[in-house]
Image (tube, rainbow, N blue to C red; front, side, top):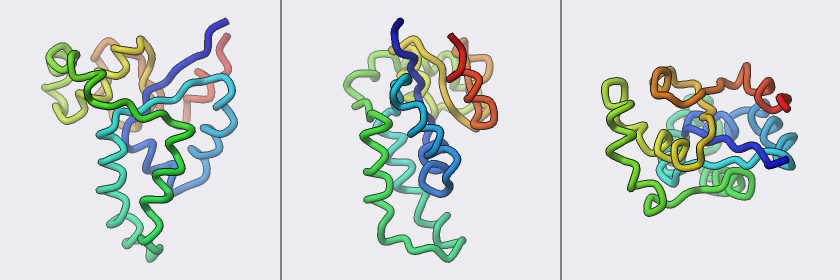
Length: 141
């Protein structure tokens, strides 16, 4: 039986840092699921986390370490591996949010679903899972 795989959107990486639920799901399923994210998703998480933490009066100085700690669980994919699928991905997602093409490209490259809270991936031809439903994906044979 081959391992399942999921590509994570930046919003899932952010949730893994801000809360415990996503982090627990990642840890509990790391033995049976390969988690991936395009490198730009990590860059987005590092960009958007400081203001989110500041709003919550949480320290922002440890953000880099918090995001870096996810990399052993969620393998970052360098752009050189997925950029060849940019055109195909943009055809599918540009009308909704062209900035999301790297996540879609990684899912197409790996032939696996996307874990996101973003409805922009609906209708792109790739299955999507949200945090409240992803446990169903983990439990499927």
